[in-house]
Length: 354
Image 1 (cartoon, helix red, strand yellow):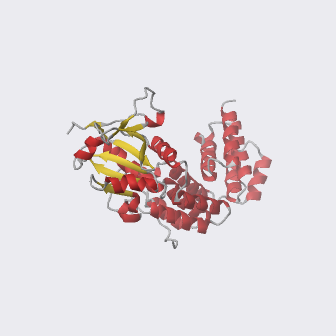
Image 2: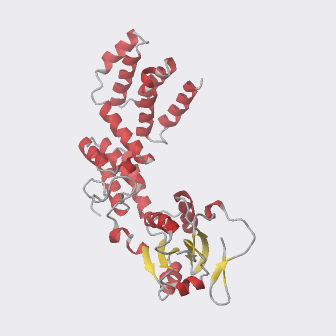
Image 3: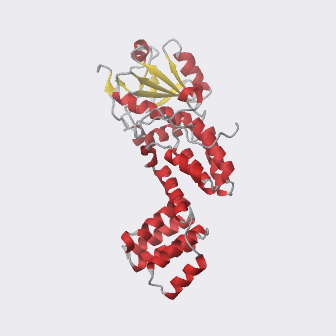
């Protein structure tokens, strides 16, 4: 969405007749006329909240407001907090009101993403009830209404609530895809984990989670790093301390699967004996399954995948699909981009649909 400066100094969308891009589509809205040292390993959540979707994270700068990255402003300070500030870093302005339902959906997600952007963008919240003159000047007719400012000028915007994926795209477009401090820390943590230094990775993931308590990548990374470091009790405490709703989030659920798989294969039996048993009777699928667990425990991931795929090939529904379920856990443990995961998923699909 493009904007123009009106003769009276107000701003309004440019009427170009062009359709909005998918990232700027209007969502639910409400009419204005309607009523660092490494932290101790541990995931930061609010112990006073009931478990489930309403559980709130705690921690982070300035009580979760992201320091000066997210702030309240008003008509008097708009020029300084938005126009002047946007000459140094892009500023997103969220026009909202306490009675606006869609505002309650949009605001927290937008704040979270701004915090995670780590200084590449800032956010200013304007309560339209308390700043009616400014809302009128900006020609705000429904809320939530979001304007993006850069170099002292409005450059983008949208009205209504948006899904998180589109909000990410909105911010990435505004910042030119620049990485903030949080992404930098998480990338470094991923590299340390991949390079075989899980304790350093755990410290970095913990630092990231302190900055953004509800960051799924940081939470999942802490669990994975603890497992890789052999800190089983630490990983278990982290998982047990999570609200149930968090345990179902994709990346976190995958990390939990990796932990469970590690525990399942801990006492998997003697590898040589199991191999001999399978060689003696290739049709013994239980022995082959046990061999796969032992191979995984021995860090022979490709061989473990081969044995489980062979079980699926011989009998797809053996033991209520136990081999297929174990394969999914291994893929989750290795991560979606691992070459064994991508090749293993292709091979599994080929076997299942052959």
